[in-house]
Length: 129
Image 1 (cartoon, rainbow, N blue to C red):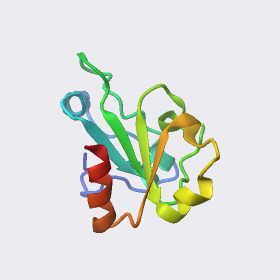
Image 2: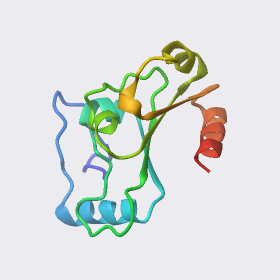
Image 3: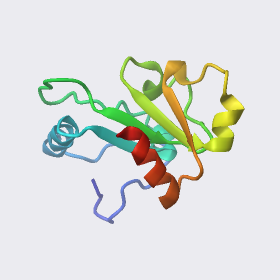
């Protein structure tokens, strides 16, 4: 959703919702029809979203949640890290190697890619197939 100034977030000290109920229902219908929902680490840190289908009936399982987090800054206490739903965190290969052998994100799947630009996106999408 965009505000009247065309911004998604005004970067105020606290995050606030400016979306109407109808728009929220639409977002949840779109999630319900999706295989995966993806966000960047900035959204994960600022909003602590669940990215689950809640406002509309769900038949089947929740969509896969994908977080682009090049240095794995998403806290273990976040909803994406600590709930029972499937989440894949994509980070750089060097970050992935640095956390190898450590419990990270409460068993959520961490995948290292060469970069998180256009090249990394292609690689990450191949992992999701």
